[in-house]
Image (cartoon, rainbow, N blue to C red; front, side, top):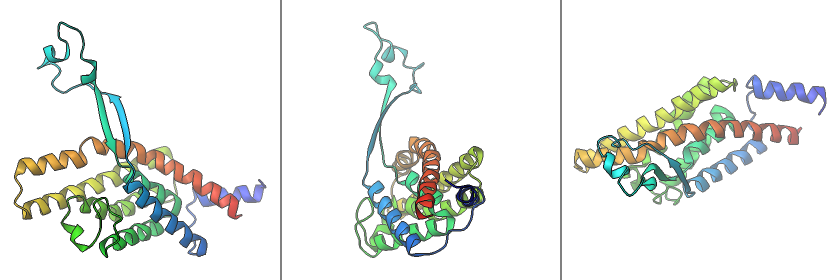
Length: 227
């Protein structure tokens, strides 16, 4: 790599040079839209150790005379990586084009294409999960505003934290609104919130940080190839 190319690359990565709207940008946006669809229907299975919250009040349950119930100290979790996917897109395309990509994805889903987890169409606005998807746009705005071309570790950490928090806040409020319209009980609403925004928030933040770094690697590779 020449010094000139290295200088251009550093400017593009570190100083947040705005991406130009070209045919290449459009192709990247279409590919990122496809990535969102793929991530929607991708399920990752994780198993990791946990400490049960009721371990002291139910000591005999976890430590019976026959030995330790090790399976009670393992958590099996099914994870859909769509939120990390939007942060990868943010890192690759920057704020404006990532928001346009996600907006296009939402519009396609609402006009009838079955690209959401439970299908598509305008009636999807009454699904509990729709408002998490709607929260992607402001999340990208705030996360992108925090980064502003500065991809230091702490900046990425702050962007991922704020972005994920915005998604789950808007998603939870939207879910409460729709559940209230459907006259669901408070226990049902709480159950849905814990399912959608409980442990999932921890996974979202962890993998979103990784996704931002991967987006920067992909951007470097694309910049080198196009140069």
